[in-house]
Structures are given as C-alpha cells and as structure tokens.
Amino acid sequence: MKYHVLEDYYELSDKLEVVLTPEQIEERVWEMGRAISADYAHVTKGEDAEKHSLLLIGLMKGVIMFMADLMRTITIPVEVDFMRTASRTSAAADIGLMELQYRPSLPTSVTNRHIIFVEDIIDKGLMLNHALRTLRLFNPASLEVCTMFEKPTFRLIDTPVKYKGFDLPHKFVVGYGLDYREKYRNLPFLAALRTERQ
Ligand code: IMP
Ligand code: MG
Image (cartoon, rainbow, N blue to C red):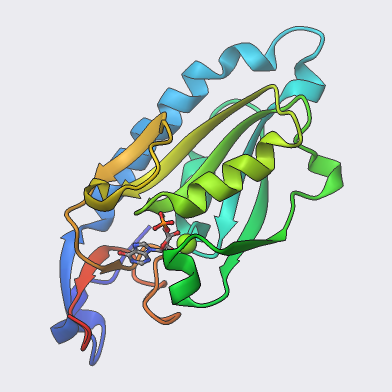
C-alpha cells in the first residue's frame, strides 16, 4: 500500500504531529497477526473446528482500519463481526454510562466460540469492560482482548489484554481509525492532535 505523508494533508499538517508512521503500524500489526494465528491454530483442528472457529469482534467505528489490517495478517480460518458502543454524552462516558447499540448478529453468534475482542484504543478501560461484560453473557468458549493502542496512565479498570500494539503517552491521538469529532479517521499514521481544548 502506498501512503500519503503528513505534508500532503492540506490545512491539517500544522495541527498534527506524527506519533507512529504507517510502516511502524504495519510492522506491529503483522507481528500481532502472526501471534494470533499461532495461538489459535489449535481451534481450527478437530471435529468441533467448524463451530468453534475464531471470531474477531470489533467496536465501531474506531477499529475499522486496525480490523481490516489485522484480519489480513491472520493465516487461520477467521470470522469478523462488529458491535457499536455509543456514549450518550462525553460526560456520560466519563462515568461509564454507555449503551451497546448492536449485538453480534445471530449467524456469527458468540456462544461456544473463541472470541478476540478487538479495540482501537484503551484509555480508562470503561468501554472495554462494558463490552466484555456483554459478550460474556453469551458464554463464549474463550474471550481475549486485542488492542492496537493503550494509554495506561488513566486506566480505571484492569482488564487483561492479551495482544497490544503500542503503549502511548497520555496525549490525544487521531488517525488510523481514531477521530476527533469524527474527523481524521482517514489518516494512515497516528498523530497527536493540538486542539483548542489542550
Ligand atoms: P475508555 O477506555 O473507556 O476511556 O474509552 C476508550 C474510547 O475512547 C476509545 O474507543 C476511543 O473511542 C476513545 N478515545 C480514547 N482516547 C482517545 C484518543 O486519544 N483519540 C481518539 N479517541 C480516543
Ligand atoms: Mg472507539
């Protein structure tokens, strides 16, 4: 894939500072895909393989780029599904009031499946905790977490993360699927954003 560089993003480049290049991201995603393929190779064997195959479940919309890249690096049979978590307001998000808008659809039901819950970024961990609690209600065969980014500084809920791309300093970042007011998701790199709020 051929990527634009920061300077190509008209009127944006002065607001952004590149934190990770597309190449750094690509390399790390490749390693994560290889690890997942090796760790889950056993679930694709045996009589129950069909109904126990690996299922990646992502949280829209931030995870789109990571999911698209990650699934292309996995070399065992795999399925994908998505959920959507909407915070009613950002104040509500701060106290963990979130609503799961979509549940995994029935054809790719969670029950008895090996699930990897795929996240773009974990900050306080509230979103993750809420999603995992919901998934556990469907009795998966196993449930692990894979996140591209984590900002460990303000983690409130300590959920184990099996696969992690990068730890980040506590800065607001955009790009590679992450947004600020729905903008910047298209950037192929991860950038720190200088906003009026900061
Ligand atoms: P938390 O872990 O419950 O705090 O929520 C994590 C969610 O907040 C992520 O899924 C993102 O949607 C959003 N988020 C947290 N930090 C950032 C950031 O630096 N840039 C963009 N979105 C972020
Ligand atoms: Mg998100």
